[in-house]
Length: 227
Length: 252
Image (tube, rainbow over the protein chains, first blue to last red):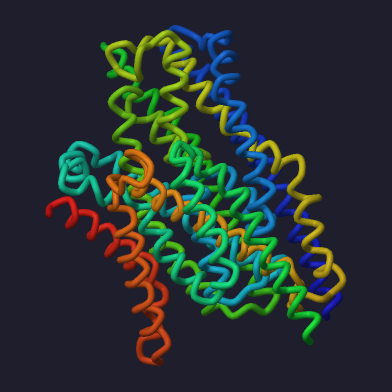
């Protein structure tokens, strides 16, 4: 019975990779092809020389960021969740916190079957909600625009990310203050003394995360020695 | 027909809507497969339903924030393209930045409908797609090998056993992520207007605090058997309170 279950799981994982790879390639072709199709409709194709120059001025930075995101987040998301998250985007401000919250809610451990299922369910649901809300929003853009662009509501939407991280910080810091204290203090001091780094916060995640992992490893080893 | 009208015309909606529909279908496929696989390996369906409800409520407010990104970009790029970019692969903090940089490369002073041309739009659209596609490419090339490492113990049959340091490392990485952002809010407040001037924007810090305190209340409530259900909505409501605090601060 257990062997059968394992065989099914193997099959499930293999198919997930097949679908994930095929879907990613199709979406890539569609996304890169769309500007040319639109260009055909508009009567002017993209200027490849300008696009090339643009890529070297801003694209390289995002390429490095994408590599870091892939290395950091794929183990958190698992295979199915990983493919979906990189297709649907909005990782830091939505998908990662959403998947981490779901995983924590059911107590799933990284790398387990349960985590793979939970993470895929969470990312798929989150993506569908975004697609649905944007579709409704776009359909009702004319009546919604005055409400959403009301100046008194702007501070709320400018602070979606702090609101998200405030809630998540309490949830994770309270159980792991020993790990959180040093990266929080070091990052705060760094941003205080070099305020220009604020524009590169998404890159500062790497040293901050490395620091947190290093401290976590120290406590992990210490705990192991004590036991 | 002006360029902006053309960019929001029916063929544009069909092209962009078609891609979005494909991705939505993909999400449904992944979701149904995961749910069935979860059932097959004996996972509690109530747990899986809780994850779906919690993830849905969690995503509502950030999605409305993303919708604002669509509105912001629609003034220069029309509605369908920003709708596609922010529904699929894009990221709120990325799109405006890259669109602006791309506009400069095609000779525009700034991203605006007055200066937009057909070729300019097609180039900006291509650059927006190319700059952020690397995560997908890496997934195609390495997801299997990379996740395979973490799944080694599953193949050996040790499904639910703890994975040593791996799980702790993931939590630590997330703590690092949150710390970097909160540190940036502190740094902005203290020094953005000159070192230690304390004249920067303090709204994000208050929002973090209000959202965190609300979360603390929810965690306290969720531990009481009668109120266990509130855990599903804890993040969404905490965010709502935090965002409401930002509105109030602005009114004062």
